[in-house]
View (cartoon, one colour):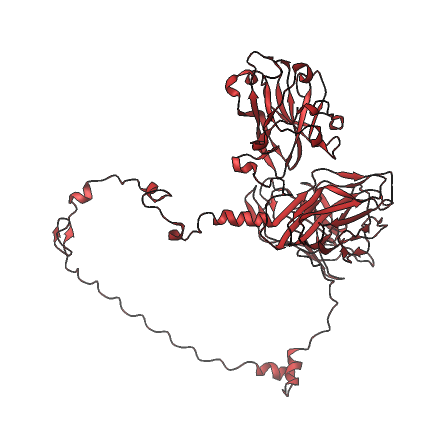
Length: 594
């Protein structure tokens, strides 16, 4: 049967001729995923792989790529088992990536680390022919020819038993005595009459489900129906989340003309004291081969452990990325030089798969990736978006918090039915206050991070003060992605901001919801008109320009740009972010998402 409609697939092809005369081999290719795959978007479960025949030295088959959206679990791989009718068998693990409809060639696949940390073994050679059963029989004492030995294996057949005769059908028995008829309650041996009122006076059953619920007069306990106690599942999910941290780069990051190691902006995790962790990372580098790269991992003071690069050596320039793999363990903080390749029409760069263990002492802190160019080069070396770091706690005291990079140590947006927010509304203790002359026509931006894909429908805002005498027009909220493209916008909010009943946290719907992938977004505000400076204001944090510490455009958390705008532009240049309004608290407004 074909794949379910909408399933992303790529076509894997291969050509397998003989190295002598070029004759095409026969045989087959077995393709097996490393895990049971679940496609939640199309409600499909793939428990295994399959095979495709090699005909005249060629094969072609459709399969699901490893980076297919909606297909779980993360990190699965394909086992590729090439079994030609002649020549050597080849077995290896590989990541088969591609967009829906792409064609991937067998010779382009790069053998990858086997799931679970091992690697694919080499195929064994052809074994010596085994002894026949007759030869073994002679060794065990049989005397005679092969024909005589075969005859000795068959014994005489036994006689076939006679079929038994079918017995005659028995007569139908007589009807037994019937009980006397009577009314309900007449006695245990009295049959009920069909005219008894208890069979003809229908009654409406009384609703009683509520009485068995929590707080009812006759509640059913979880144990009574074989269920876990209340909160068990939630506690288990929270405990699992607390043990695993996953950081994913939302955008490319570059190093240019520098060999000084520096922290990666996104790939880090929080470590508890007196605990042991396992970590692994998938890093996609793109840059000049003459620049290459140097990487390391660091931990908090007193931490011990080691890590291995699992990366190619310097000077990896051949098209298939062939190189010796560096596996020697380094101390935390000790750098390793690794080869880098430039992307092309067929190559995305080069992949590094570092992994290691770290044990903390009495001091908690962070595990961080640090990197730079190995040789200073004017052409940038980029660590690509999608590169990631996964850290799993193996032992130690109970985790202090769960989630990604410990961004929200006390409260989460989900605690209030929200999908994300710029900060806990409990911290929104200040208000913005700007004159119309200072803000009107300017676009102010507040950065917000999404850690998972959502459908973005609404922006929440805290309207803490309303100027009912204000004259407003062309007032909007909108959402820009990390490339500056406008993804969603509200209707004109002018009448909303002069309505005194709206002085509260209010939900402002986008004109059209959109699907937002994980990454960095900017909520934009545009006001026009005139209002009293200290009357119209919004809930905000007390943060001023210091909130942008260590950040530069296009990554400022709070910023403003443009002037004279009457609508939000379809696109903006985020490299033009400025902070002319931020020292007054403007753009630190509280926002949330549903």
